[in-house]
Length: 590
Ligand code: GTP
Ligand code: SPV
Ligand code: MN
Image (cartoon, rainbow, N blue to C red; front, side, top):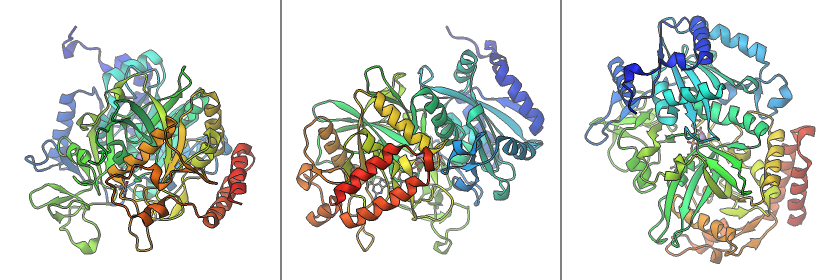
């Protein structure tokens, strides 16, 4: 039955809990107006028009990029700020050596003084959202309060936002409370605080991505990982992709790679012409919530409904689908402009930049034209390869889990863990070069276990123990792999072409899962021999392939020592099983 909009229950009366909390935040921030977000298309249009009028959004060339806009963030506010991100648990040990920690009382007092009166001249937006399909038992809801209409527009794309979420909150009686203000955009007055014990997030002083779109990393990973541990599931920094083989069978794979290490690209992979008959379906590109199912398999949902993706490098050659996807109804942040107002970024082979990401005339002396962490926000519905099962409330069954990192040397193209316990060690020992997705130096190798170093809401030692427990509950656990698309030679050239060609590696994994492919059993795990990979039509020299698929025992002995030192940094909470697994690898290295 269709209801006329003016007959709908007013949003604040749907949930007394939410309304009371919003009122308390209004009093604290002294917002000049309060606007509850309904989540309708007309509301998004209206907000967009307001932002265009205020000059905060720039419409892009309507012929080539219909419905697209450009936002420029403050030049000091272009990436996540890990050093200003805190987990505020009663006990410091619960946050662990992997997190910055602040006592909840101290953090609350600090944030109270920052939020006090901060919205005097601004509108307070109330954004109810659902992470995951609105009717899935695995989904979780939250409400973000923000004074940034840019954040509202992003949340409208990235989450199921508005009335249905608020209705679910009213039914369930529980939600994550997220408070956000851009404040003065002063890096000295910028904090991202998490209170997992009370399901609260407080973020001040940044309007950018993971710092400000609280449904994403703050809720769906840091808070959710904490909830997942108490409830027996996993919240992970993983893409989810469906791979349909030429026989018509589809298998789902979930992969954890650190930020800007290839998740969106793999989730939207385009099969090379020399592998005919394969089809690829995107379920998710950044976050997976995984639950042991009654059938003993691991089932996954994507809590998001859009992509906040890295723009540079996207082009018709590397990924035609991604390129086509962002040519309509897309919100660009921090890209450059061509003379005729088209967005431009490094990696595009057509057009040339005249205005850089800061709005200045382009001068190569100022660095790249588009910021290396410039992003697109786009609805998953724009993706030509969007899987219909992404909306399935039960999620999809996972056949393989893949960890990966960006490493010039050492890590081979792919190896397979011997079993789940070994796989947990493989995940826990992931290391990767830092990227522009977070502020700080780029290209430094650091440990990034399960690609969750910036996102795990509790002590990694307890997290690994939880991973071991989840595995013990699975009668049909997925196989676990490690990949590295980023091996280079001495001149810096990539040894592996990557992108669509990565399907060859996934194909070997799926044949392994089906018991149809052989492998070379090495100390670190099982590697394909060159003849185990489908290399038909692949343009990689025999020497490069050999280098990609070999294990250097001397280098790996050093790596094992480094992993041991890292793990021992977690002290007595570290599960002994990880050191047992490491000892097995070490003894096999001889
Ligand atoms: P976040 O959104 O930060 O979590 O990043 P992501 O993991 O989704 O990474 P994305 O797919 O956006 O890729 C990041 C960068 O790596 C882009 O510049 C890509 O062009 C590049 N890239 C992705 N896949 C490959 C690959 O297989 N090989 C190489 N050499 N580069 C790749
Ligand atoms: C990442 O950094 O892993 C991202 C972008 O996906 S952000 O939303 O900023 O976290
Ligand atoms: Mn990410």
